Image (cartoon, rainbow, N blue to C red; front, side, top):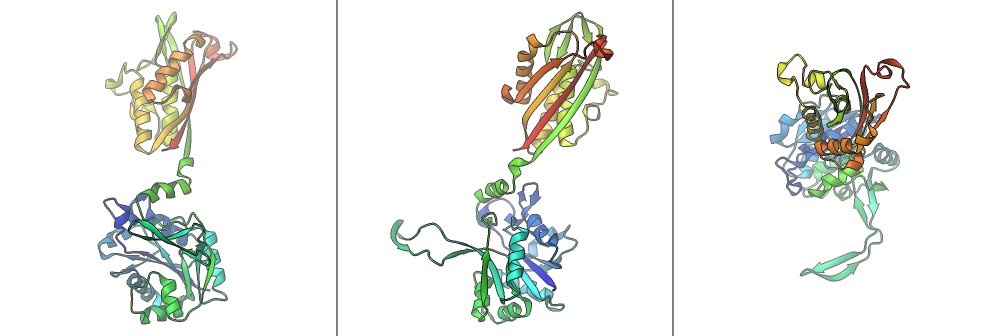
Length: 376
């Protein structure tokens, strides 16, 4: 069975706000249209996809390499007709017509529509109305409406291709959706179970709701960092932004804050953006002696520029001396200040290497860190 899909994306979507039509606005890292198209191009039973665009948006088609592009009309039903005509030369058996503003449509909904078309000329997903319904007048409740047998329509709405093409060719226009066109032509349309997640983005608040449903809040990145610095003659070690009295200091191109360096690299790692050496090359003399809060603030800034917040960080300092415990609270506070997070998201602790290795011989200090980033 040859199955095609038409994604209608020629509207202007003014109610959604923004500087561009809603189908081209960002949603969880991709454009709305990208999500909607991908739902069908990746579906194993869909063979072809037609994307119907407004004439002003044809430049947005770049990147849709496996999609047929059609130019839409002034109304939704005119745009659907354009998509159907784009397929008419090589007609599929079934066509699924979908609103681009429903980017969360699942493969299960698509499957249910296809399955229903075995016995019916048309099929569409819907949700039964469960809320009480009122009639209003003058801003007041004027009556109630029985909600029995009422449904909230969704897409994709599926049809046998030749039947829906003929129905659209004969329809005078102005239909709310393709089910209306089909019924006007005498076609039976089966109702299949829709999903609450298959929402239509209409207003500005729908973007936030869609991202929550897509699990944007669960976009979590974890990075780890490790650093080592040797001792040299001195009177204090800078560790996690705190000067800790000691009979030696740490040697390095910058202030050699081994803990903050490990943490900075952990954040860069979570972002897949390299390490300190790539952003602040030690070969560049301008960074000589730089305080490490500059590096950490840069990494945190990159995280926020890319839509992430600090979930939590955990730094472990590995040394025999100096003793870290008495200073851990101050270190946590300083790291929290630099990153602009609460101190309960920052852990600093220490361990020894049981007198083994270079840290055991008190030749230097090692540090490891883990950072968790959560998409804001």
